[in-house]
Amino acid sequence: MKPEFLVTHSGGFHADELLSSVILTRVFPQARIVRSRAPEWITPASDRIVYDVGGAYDPQAQIFDHHQRGAPLRDDGRPYSSFGLIWKHYGRPYLADLSTPEEHIDIIHAAFEAGFVLPIDLLDNGALSPSVAGPLAGLTLPSLLETLKPVFDEESPDAADQAFHQALSVSRIFVEAELAQRAAKLRAEALVMEAIEKTGKGSVLELPKGMPFRAAIIQAGADNLLFVVHPRDSDWCVTGIRREENRFELRADLPAAWAGLTNGELEAVSGVKGATFCHNGRFIAAAKTREAALAMAELAVEEAARAA
Image (cartoon, rainbow, N blue to C red):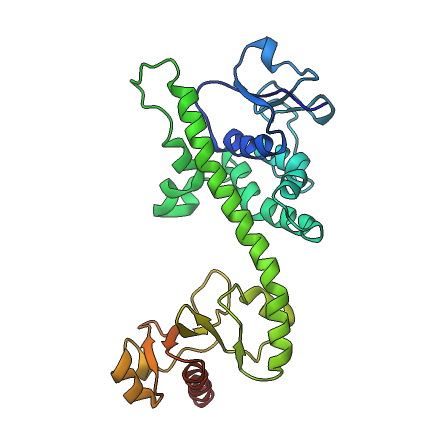
């Protein structure tokens, strides 16, 4: 039986029940959200899913709370919030509703759990301090969602519920955008792998368009690659490859003499007609044509070899 109601607590809201609501409202679009702490609502029944309230975790009874003694833990001992519990049980149907290819559902489910759901759960349970984000602590998703709560002297009796639904709309944008990016990376992987095979032992990877490429390069063990060339709108890009996902250090920088130059100055220094731009950080350059971009990339490879 499909639920008629999605029941979570009233009052102030947090990221975990907002994000849980994103999942549940797509999987069960016919159900109505009820925000209440009244016993008649937070008690399990066949017509509802209860989450982040109710003092129990029982998937069969469709209640998913994590505040009680003996609250559920992951296999490694790390805690769940309601978001993690809802994702565990309803994440795959949610991904299917997003038209995710069946062969990608388990991959994306696991990756989203590790990279998005788990941090939310740890923060909600106090197992991860917001201070780890340093000056950006107030800009984490949970913090930003909480700024959408009504101010303390808002007198409207509907203010909390209205703010919840506004925050739910914002939450949905972030979740679906994150998942769209993860799905796109998997689609790109096959294209990048094909290009890597064509490139062989070369140092410059040419792609048919801009797309995520680093993960596939690492997976393929293509340590020979130093630069990627691809079209972008009306021009072509030459891009360095990061050594690590979350750091800016590249396998090879573009030539130092090109840094910050554009158009005629860059053409004169590089010797490449059609060179139009090199970022001062030497991680990306642009050219008018494919031939010019490939020539710039090969010159950058030669310079990197001399510097090695």
